[in-house]
Image (cartoon, rainbow, N blue to C red; front, side, top):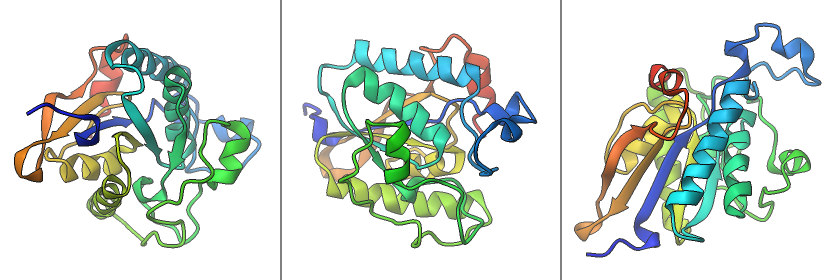
Length: 221
């Protein structure tokens, strides 16, 4: 059976966070969203390496949709890929980080679009900010993210790349047949086969495209 674009799902996690390198990072920002750190310099480099890998190894226009968590570190990762592949980013709160607040600290798509013009403001997410349940564990976030990913896959045609967090990627990966944690800016591919089930294609959480593979591997928890 040939694998067509509609049968394929890709998964990556955001690049390394600035708060791992700089404990004073928030004082240097023009916001107070302590749960929304941006890239570290190494995160930026790794996202560019991932984007270049996708451009070089996939046929033109293969990935049709980039589905990103609304947190800045995910959007920055998605944006590097969107610019390399010349496609838009769809913001999906359903695959956001563990939600332990009634007012999660992320920007809405319209706010993000000011900094990231590649965002598709016409996309209607399967789960809104207001619809996010309160969560206090990776498992709860993973279950919510799996549900969101399933709804997104049913909603959209063509190959999809999900850009999430540790716990949300855990859930997305499980939805498509191989639950586990993936590292920063790694790449995982799933495809649908006879019977409608997805399965892993190649390595889970592949980091072969990264110069700093150790940071990515150490983050896979």
